[in-house]
Image (cartoon, rainbow, N blue to C red; front, side):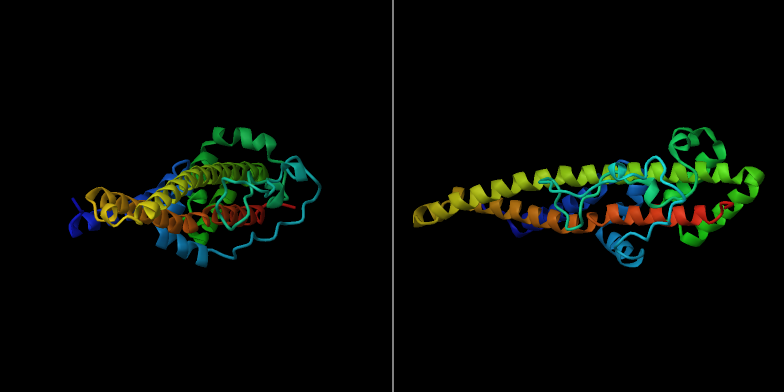
Length: 259
């Protein structure tokens, strides 16, 4: 029995929901990533358009090469069959690209032990936090730190960098997982299309209810594939947006350091 118009509308709505679920799913690894994607494609597109240049902000000139600054520590884009985005895949960020202050290796392991730092980091890594709000919070934190401000600011950026890096890695993993699902669905669509093309040559087969059901299933799979592909173009902006956020917060925190 052929699907009614109502059934088709329900399936189309389900396809759109599946695409929205993609955006939320790839961000499930961290609060910062959720800020980027939970609001849906429109919000993410606006963030990509208004959140600064598509390329990362220029890195400050380091005082000296520090651990985490060498080329081996920097994520390098390369060929990857699971990476569907136009943007090059860059793995874990290197703090040396955005931080010219004291080394962070020890601070990355200890920042959670400081309650003041641990309380402020979530505010700074949230995309919804406006820059002027973040800068005001950093100013208050700096004033309260007194003579220990350099050490405290180093801990603060260590926390911000760690959380953004973790959220970004979760998004990248989610994108790759959905790319694999898309590839499998594409193969299924191709196989079904070839079978239907062969069966369509016989008029009696073409008019049969079984053929119509197969055609409906193919149309459904194609719709799901297209909806997911469209959503993925927005999700692909997330790693870039998170990288920009790390540069921005690093620049604002570093500005408060004593030289």
